[in-house]
Amino acid sequence: MNLKSATLQKIDEVITHYPVKRSATLPLLHLIQEDIGHLPERTEEWVAAKLGLEPINVYEVITFYPMFRRKPIGRRHIKVCRTLSCALVGGYKTCAQFEQEFNTHRGEVSPDGEVTVDFVECLASCGTAPVVLIDDDLHENVDCAKAKSLSDQIKAEARVRSQESGVRSQEPESRIHT
Amino acid sequence: MPAPAQRRIIFAHIDEPGYTNDLPCYLKHGGYEVLKKAVTRPPQELIDEVKKSGLRGRGGAGFPCGVKWGLVDRKSGKPIYLIVNADESEPGTFKDRYIMHQDPHQLIEGTMISCFANNVKLAYIYIRGEMPHGARILEKALAEARAAGFVGQNICGTGYSCDIFVHRGAGAYICGEETGLIESLEGKRANPRIKPPYFPAVLGLYQCPTIVNNVETLCHVKYIVEHGGDAFTRIGTPNNTGTRIFCVSGHVQKPGYYEFEAGKITMGELLNDVCGGPLPGRKFKAVIPGGSSAKVMRFGERYKGKRKVGADMVDYDWGVEDVPMDFDSLGMIGTMGGSGGVIVMDDTVNMVEALANINAFYSHESCGQCTPCREGSLWMKKITTRMVHGEARAEDAALLKSVADQIPGRTICAFGEACSWPTQSFIAKFGDEFKGYADAKKVAKPTEEATLI
Ligand SMILES: Cc1cc2nc3c(=O)[nH]c(=O)nc-3n(C[C@H](O)[C@H](O)[C@H](O)COP(=O)(O)O)c2cc1C
Ligand code: SF4
Ligand code: FES
Image (tube, chains in turn cyan, purple):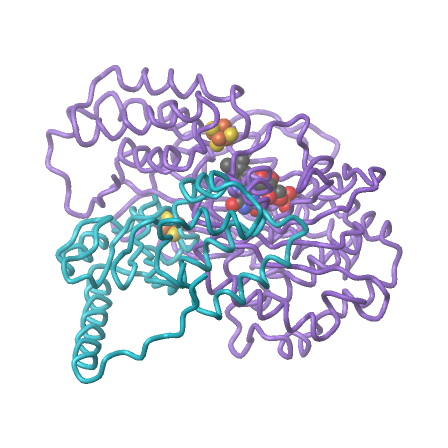
């Protein structure tokens, strides 16, 4: 696995938070996914070796928790709340708006690779429904108009990035092969 | 009579202009003074204050906090752990979020006092995975508190040491159930444990005695230790002491969070006076009073019986609007106060579709260990989804009821009850709508009607 040195440092740190190493399984999976974007092949072997477990112990955790994914997703992850309070005030329409903006379907990477739109369950912000989590940021009261403006923002950022990458290639980040 | 005013003790600083979530701001508002005094008192005294206060857990079950602490096995010689349940994932509930994001030190202080009272040396805050900012805010706050000697080694110079770490979940609702949470914290699938024998107070985290409390509950502990258990009983109503934070969502003019003395406000006052009533041109149809698993209330129905007022038994005859918002009153009328999540539905909502939405949630979230829960929640979802998107049959209502009735009492954890109560109560109270759904579908939907499934 190719992990940033900062990630490896955090991994070693977080293991010390627990009297039993196995408890660090979820934190390690989060850290790897944050670094790489998904949990690549052999993640279970690597984490198991790190924590003194069998790969199956890690595998069964990966498959249980909805936030962990085995495949790359779009550059931005748009998670629209599907549950009742959001649905009552238009959450399904909000989701459809995002799908339309990026010409995609729930659970798929958009053709331009820019986003993955997903439905998720209650995000504990039902009073400002409908809500949408884009990467780490919660957006509240996202009606169709707001979904459109958020989409426009993402598209504008994508344009800037593609112009920049045309000018200079990205600095490679230092990664450590372990 | 106008609705009573809010009484903000836990949300005292939420949304206050200029109030920030860093340590200096917290200290400026008297932060950690309660902890400083608490660590000079005998721990048992603190437990007794909490017992006296009558504080009931705010995570959903309403179990008395002092009693829970009293059940902890202190003779085993094993370490005692405390876990803050910050998984907040019962649909309709959104209160712990604001405490953690805007006032994290209040939670840390309450947690540390509870740790000291129970001789805990290591605690975890289990926060749901979808709150990455919340986790970072808590981590930063913990670092500040550690540096200032309120967390970690030698707390307030007393020689008592206890650390707190943040642990993130990964999107599974069942991690809110305390034994599922413990499994998850051990690095496993969040499959709840069977009780007995795995009562957390005896065989919890790493098979050691463990206290699991909700975020809000631990904030109340701070208030109780500051003001005394007796003072706390003077807030709210007997057996429903302190305040409750109501999270109102759905079809009202002003959804949001409101903190009131428990039992001092009725459902009608909350929805009409505080939340501004129904949307223009609409009427209230139904309300779920305590998170999505609580049994639904139908506007227009009446609840009758006898209840205790002081030493006397008196008759009550309530409409939905008259029900006092406390654990006991809501329990008495056949539903529950639960987590405080009040979900309001108006006359544009089709109840079959609303139930289909709820059933999709529960079938997605069942951990799958128990056949009645795994299969039952899936069947209920499939039937209600078929009714909406396929063919609806007159016998579906009876079929749904029969599936729902076969789940409760036959499962490892209370999710079994939680997933069957919506179906049972929707069918009991809106059975006509289920029976007539096939015909209702033939009529075009009004445009203001939201898609729910
Ligand atoms: C299916 C299920 C989900 C739960 N989800 C939560 C939750 O998200 N947050 C919470 O605090 N308690 C939740 N609980 C309740 C916990 O199991 C436990 O009772 C609570 O954390 C105890 O804390 P308290 O006594 O302070 O309320 C849930 C229970 C069940 C059965
Ligand atoms: S009742 Fe459902 S959620 Fe609870 S342990 Fe059984 S299968 Fe899992
Ligand atoms: S239902 Fe969408 S945040 Fe709770």
